[in-house]
Image 1 (tube, one colour):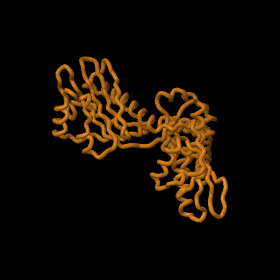
Image 2 (cartoon, one colour):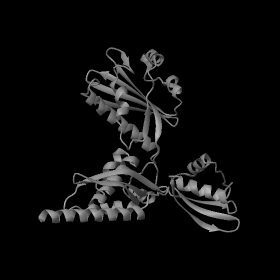
Image 3 (tube, one colour):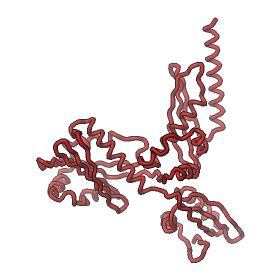
Image 4 (cartoon, one colour):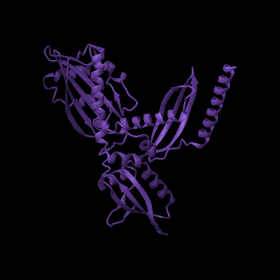
Length: 359
């Protein structure tokens, strides 16, 4: 009798969850506006017991989604500033969420859903923490690690180089850099060997140009007994950064130690990339732009680009008449950045007056 009651209880609970799922399916939205950060594949599981509460599972998912967002847009040095964010603060930044899948397996409830965060609210939250976020742009980049045994004057690229072999085996879903490793070319090896005595000054352009990529990172890994020094030559957007990192008591022939080195280097390179794409949300540049009201196509395209441009904090229509629509735009950057960004999308302006006119 008791067993039957328990079975009826669980069946009732299950039917209730199916009902809730259908409601969420029809009334939640998977449409994400351009002014939102979308975090997908948030996976949460919890044992299905009598005291089970689905809202608690979803709340855990909100926290997990926000953590993923932070990893994407905040430098590692700033992430510790937002370790203990309250749930109500996270919920305030959420624009919508949608359940992708839910299931019960062996008395465990599994949930997979996506969360859309309002960009303006996220930026405001981070600005209050004195944190400047980054645009989560992905980038394909050439990576070449070269191991140099200083005491023997040996140089390894493709063989006896665990960093080269394992580099692309270590990847997190919040990594924005997609690394292209060079093919095993003996000619490249000989070119680098010829530069051995001047390798720290060598620009590697002969090799980089073969891969038709704008950006590249060359890691010179100097091995001297139990000390490892990595000199990274980071070439991104026509700028070159040189950075030294040191490791002690790590063995380049030990897989675990090599993974530690790779994780450290990748974390550092991701931070460089985030810094390059950083948004100074403290800059609130007001712009007034006039667009001919008779050209519907131009208006639609212009508004589409405004929605898709991350540095645009907000925009609205201030005034319109039979001749012009006047837009008020708040931009997180200097005016030349805005003009350059718009020019890349084939929009130019007459900027002779206070109100710029879209040509």
